[in-house]
Image 1 (cartoon, rainbow, N blue to C red):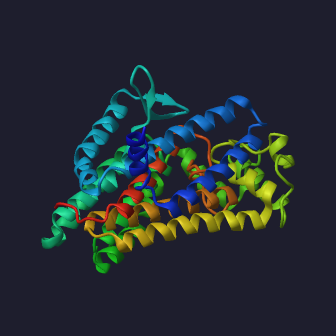
Image 2 (tube, helix red, strand yellow):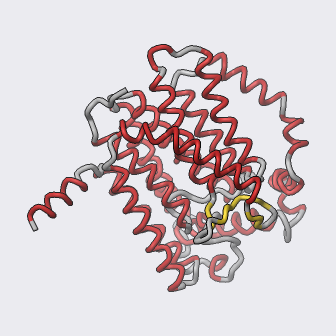
Image 3 (cartoon, rainbow, N blue to C red):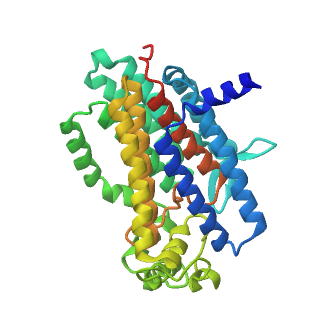
Length: 366
């Protein structure tokens, strides 16, 4: 018995206390909001609890894996993810007009979720390996490693996930030392290519952008999501209507209210003050992650911690901007709040990596 207790204590010692407290607080809020958004559905609540339990277990396991072992996982995980994305393009299931899922027999799997971690792991491993001799060619290789999954996911089409992968890759290249001239040159090239990119977008993606400019042009179609979510957030006022008391939520006006638009439910029920506190919680996690990055003893740890922290910030910004009507609807869930198993497990895998970097202080093998 003492041995088993000692084993458990050793495993838990690799959990960063501050980060764990913030994550658990957000998950608690998430459970309350999902319960309200689902009409206190027992199936939805129990499903969310199972997802949280599984994701937290994965986080604990990942926190106990030393960073130098994590770095070795990057290349095979990246290759597996790209192969699976190619499999999706060839054999994937079509749902709602998009080919994003791969049927593995016992379950349907979305490989793009795997790349959210595999891509930064691969890039961090690559740049640590070449840390002493970094040249322009290494950033070109890094850009190519980013471009392959980005284009495969964009082809599905899944614009939201593709943009998140692009942001993740850019953050890592930036922290690896990407020259400012290259960044400004890339920005200029991107701006010049906007007309071409617009022409390559699918009709529904173009409509989402146009609807953002004037949601009332199609109030019962593409503009419905934005109109109802902004009404819900605005009606919450300063302090909100109270838990389970949001009329837009309870009367089923808010679409996808347990997943992508859960922030509209939160804003209606907890108001402006609640939204500010929620943003503060997210910023506290980002700040903790960047602190871990600054203290990391290796290039791999620094790159992973900083990238995962800014990834979380990007997800929050995009989701809240989408729900508030300042960004197009791209189907990005709110981290640690939205209902969904795959996304939650991926996020807490990332939190586990942050904790591993924070608590394994010895220098990693290069």
